Length: 120
Image (cartoon, rainbow, N blue to C red; front, side, top):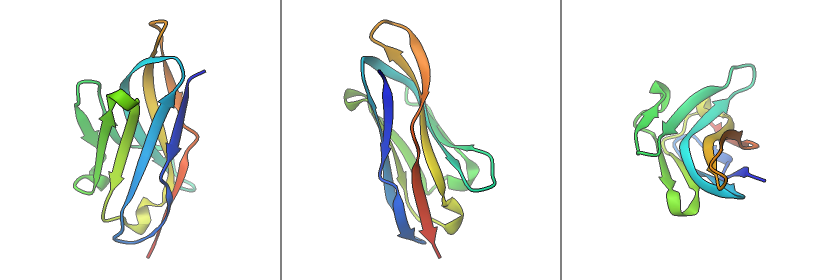
């Protein structure tokens, strides 16, 4: 069974940094496209950053210059380095990925979410 497990969330003061990790486990061949989303209370889930298997990256305007998405294909892990955090970055952060299984099929998966809270 394939799982995406996020880690690295927590409480940080404004201006601080956190690094989120999203590790895929199970009978995986590779991760294709992956992305980090976030959902704040009372708001819709939004894309924060995405990365393709070829390394193409896109960011939400609100995080450009502060957040960096990266991936380690050997570890089937995707990262989100978050610097200069602001209180408005407070949300539950979710990892999402299109995963190619060892069978050759691919599916879309979501992680369970990790809370990021930025205090002012």
